[in-house]
Length: 245
Image 1 (cartoon, helix red, strand yellow):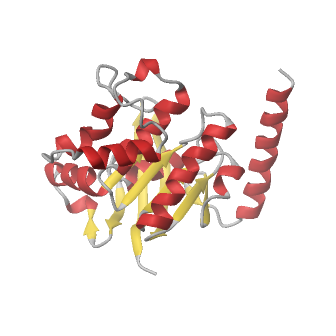
Image 2 (cartoon, rainbow, N blue to C red):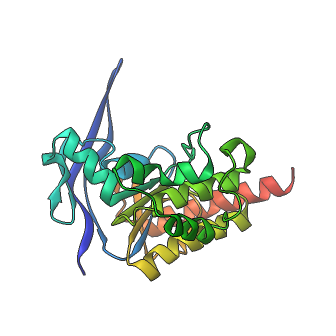
């Protein structure tokens, strides 16, 4: 199977006032084309840093990141911007919608930034796919959190990117809306052959994926069953706590 994204000995070190912080430590992992991979691990384990480096949003301190046959680290900033714009979609946990733009304009923003004219039928189709066909003229402030997340998903789908990265896409959603979002991402894989890599704390969300990668202390966890058991226990405790409030 051909890999859509591959990380080779990737490290990411941040400088802090008290020294250095190693967020990723020689991580090597590949994400097959046309598949969904869940990235799991405890808080602070390096999951989001891995996602940001893989998506070209952050440059590694060492190592290489390959998008198909392109070494992202070899690209100048302008070239990297073009690759991210045309071939990578990103769903942020915080939505990152522009409040002054309508739903339709937020969704079509990547196309317009690429100098491409949005086709009405294309926009209508993606809005219908996320269940927002009749809300295209609304502003983000007029939407629920779940609806805003679906706008963010639609924005990531509109350019039909090779890879969609999603950082805790269901983290702030109720279970029903989370299922709708995951169904959309699953359809991107199964119907359009796209690659999805998502970070999640929720084992139920990870069950939508074809495979799961576990990150622990900035490295790929080689004892994932122990980590999975711990994550399930934490998730179960969190749900029990919410149920007693």
